[in-house]
Length: 503
Image 1 (cartoon, rainbow, N blue to C red):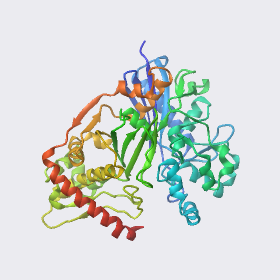
Image 2: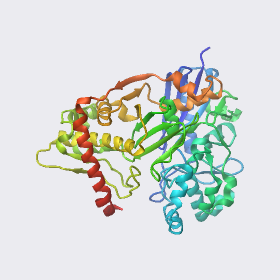
Image 3: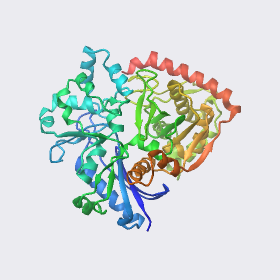
Image 4: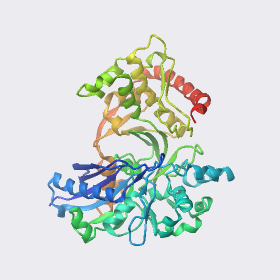
């Protein structure tokens, strides 16, 4: 009899379930969109029951699509958007809508805390290794305690999205190391840091934090009631699981010291793997805890493929009627000259600025060096190159030795862009086989929990398949080095001179 595991991947707007065999081959994927609620500008929430219905639908659908008998499914694990706040009472019911990772309601509270403790952010960084985001669990708990005390009073635990869904499936309450460590928590300890609660004035609510367990640990088993609803076998083993980025690193086979991982999607995350937590440069970037005893030091450009979407809409709307507008856009970019005739595009295309190579809320995108000789191919290519330069900028900021870049996300589907990134960084760019790397990472954690693999490392090493590899073109290095130097100068001028205008 064949055997499979399911990886459940909960995103900000899409929930997916994917079925994998022991070799890591993907057999079926089902997805369903969920709404993001914004009751107040800057607030981002999700209805818990809507998410649960989406989970039920995709679990049922993936089994139907695959044609697999549910008894052949041997394990399940969940990955999801990280941090946030999902408050439950003692019966397991949510007491308010879930708050998502990108929520900004804690800004005023954080500003007030920093006014009385100028070292707050550095103290948090020294424990967690991250420039703390507003949507982290601890600042949200502090905000709730101050603004919705009745919610906190009724609450039994504060969970993340994956922990809430896993509780619905198994009845067991816990979180994993990847979410706890950036709660913020402690990177060294791979768990929450109780001392940090005092910095937010919420030390009396430490009992709301769930127990922390390894991502590959067995969390529990599918309850009879849940099994009937989702169409799987009662007693199915369910692993603890991991946050979306750590699961993607595992699923893409990128969890090896010296490897870099770039997730080129809506945002552009760039990280280098290490066997010890990396706290340099200080007060910059995010340090993710990775299952299997690893860490990923990352720098994130908030806008990744968003730049390409904007370029298509704003500069090439005539292409949108074509069957494949992005292929046509790539052809225009390819017709341009490397270095774009000294035209520079800085890809800080976000209303909230950037968090790498430094935290700057007023950073905005721009073209520099534009003159009458530049045509559409120059502008379009400059956008592609600008994102590639931002990737190199992030890796140089991390300052760790890199053997190769594993590239995943929507941008990895473009051979043109993948080769450009190799040429700009001077590093080989490897494209793993597959598409659902977050779900695969969760599935590998499930496989480890049920004994298919002796360790997380064995899981991703034995299931990794290389789809393509792009070697840097040495003849283009002088051109791209000069263009990157211009990019750094323009970026610095943007951050120092223009950013204050847009804060």
